[in-house]
Length: 494
Ligand SMILES: [Mn+2]
Image 1 (cartoon, rainbow, N blue to C red):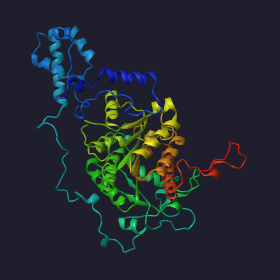
Image 2: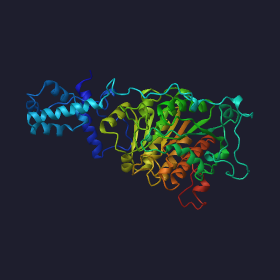
Image 3: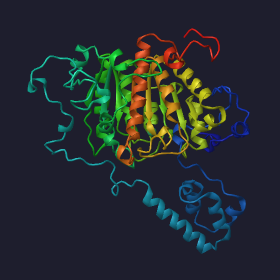
Image 4: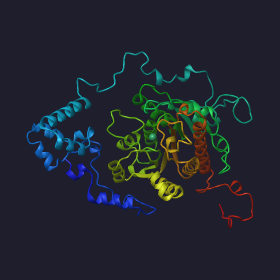
């Protein structure tokens, strides 16, 4: 049994530390070790009911009430249904009969909410007699396909530009098997994963389709003057099969397919699909490169460390699953752009105590994007051998990214997102990338898919910059400045 301090989760020192942060005395570089974090309950107590202490006068008022009902109040489970001050007020003002009826009502409610064997489904049943049980993910054997040589093949008919054939990610040629990736010495395989059950507001199923149909992912990056399509061997690896009625059934196949790409030496870039994908994606990277060898930069307006949900995996809980299963060490997780309603103070404390790094829009508001970006880049470089970038497009402001299931105002601009993506890819050994929560039909314009493709282009340019050995923060001198007048001061060697 944990101590009471551990259960209530807060010490005075912890509250004082929060107070100092609120007062604005935070140094520009803050490490979790340097500022005391609030004391945290054990992981399994997160979000669970905590015992409720009754004030003396409330306890006195309950003197004649059935002790089992008083014990129910003290267990703290009523916290889900009524704030404690409202509960105390009701008891102070109520007659004995009213108080008794009030507690009866809460107990009746509680009996409906929690799982009850015999009444509730403990698992979602599947029809195991279906002749199609695994057909959705069963691959056709090579001997049933037309004969061809292994390697990527072009889907364009013409030599100039791209288009005129079939739409692919970044206008890249197609590959279908690991043998194609190996034969083509492929650097980057972009694959769709139209998973769409992990979010309450749908359409991420069309993310891959919209990004293939819209331009922006391929071609020259003016910042580096590198054309990733020329500098890298990029392919479109098709879509990964998804059971559209079950996230739980889909994630293991996604994990196997992402690992299949990574084992050939190609970098998998997964186009979602909802953010449940971060779990199988990062797990796949850890399968291939080893647990603890992969760090993650998680771009999102949401923290995605959801726990205690009914479903094993949703788009609100992939980070928790990755950490809980030990694929990534908490100190190797860097979150950027948080600004939604959660996490609450208790969960912030949990994240800090774990050693996770988070960069909220509050931090950006106080210190400016440039400083926060440099700090996140430094943490990404310091932490890991390999880096996975999980980019939930809702990290961007809805002005730039309206087509996403859970938009939150006050987000990043494209001018902030492109440089950090280019640099992360240029400065790290990339294990893989996902770009998720693109739900194009929630956007009456084409900018959601366009901006997502430009972010993909920034990643591809960054990967190409690293291949060419260009230094951190490199800009091409020709595109950065029109001539030798020295207007911006003495020229630096770049
Ligand atoms: Mn997310």
